[in-house]
Every structure is written in structure tokens, then in C-alpha cells.
Amino acid sequence: MSVYSLLRRVGRLPKKRSKYHAIKTICDGKSFDSKKESRVYLKLLERKRWGEIRDFQRQVKFELIPETDYTRPCHYIADFVVINTDGSKEVIDVKSYATKTRDYVIKKKLMYWRHGIKITEI
Image (tube, rainbow, N blue to C red; front, side, top):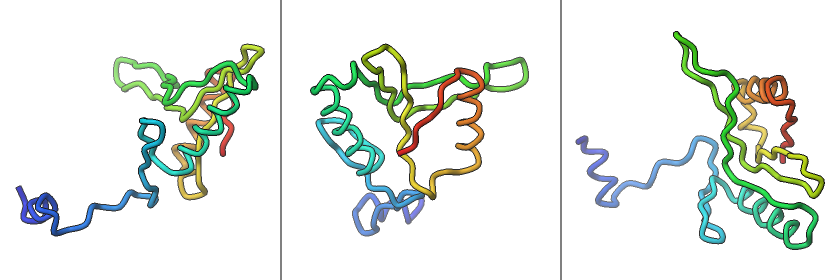
């Protein structure tokens, strides 16, 4: 164990910041990666109570590229999947400008190509 990690355990060094400076938040007993994501969760809860949507799920995993003999599978994890009153699904991803990386853009295109689902960015 390094001296740096020992000092962090003792509490002498501050915790490492997240890559995009998002602050982890706990809301309604659930952990969220950012404050913005927790606000979207509360809005979806409100929409569900008012009957605007049927239901929603958090952190849903979609397979984009299946496993082959020489490659691992590629997945996309959606922040929220909303099930509308008519039964259609909507994928919502909480993004800031900094988190729209090249990898994300490619996965967004693969999501539409493979599953026919357009991702709504908030």
C-alpha cells in the first residue's frame, strides 16, 4: 500500500474528484452519479404519480454488439427508460457538454441502428 493511499484512509488527503466534477447524490434512498440525474429522477416520479407515464426504470443495460470468438460484447447503460402510457419506450440520458464523448456518440448511433431507439439527452 502506498503512502498516498494510507494518508487518504487516515483522512489527511481529500477524496479524488470525479472526472467531470459531478457530485454523487443520494435521493429517495438511491444513489445517483450527479445532482442533475437525481432531479430528473424526481421529475419522472412526479410524472408517474400524475399518470403521464406508466413506469420508468434506472440503469437499464442494452447490448449493442454481441460477443464473438475474438471480441467482447459492447453495452450501453441508459440512465432512465421511460414506459409511456401507450406502451412505447423512451431512453433518457442525463448529459452535460463534457460527457458527450466520441464513445457516447458511437453508442448512441449503435443504439438506434440495433434497437431502433433514439436517446433523449437532458
